[in-house]
Image 1: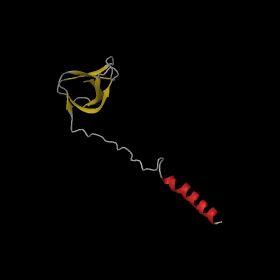
Image 2: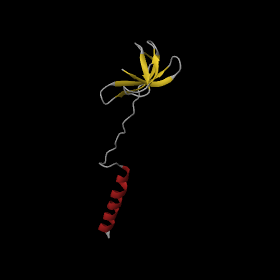
Image 3: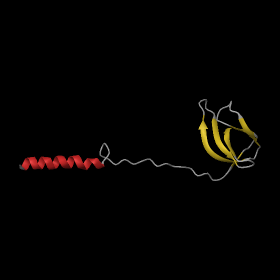
Image 4: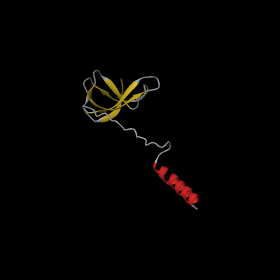
Amino acid sequence: MGPLLRWSWLLGLALIVPADLPAGGAQRRQPQVRRRNGSGPVFTSAETMLQLSPMAVAPPLRPLAAGSSLKLLRRWTSGDGQDWFQVQALSGEPQRGWIRV
């Protein structure tokens, strides 16, 4: 009875203890999400069009004069390699759209 009791105890311990560990037996560290906080508004250097989507053929929403203040929301690189910014116009009527960089 001694070896049977010893093996059942070892088997029970082996089945319960690893339930706490992920596969491989090591604790995995979850990646941290890092966000960059903007320091303030961005200004246009030349007259440009605020567009509905990040495509060259997208319909224009409104013109932006040189020096218009914008809040940068995100960056997008299109399939043909063009860089676009999604922005929110802070001067005049607040409106979101895309500008080609």
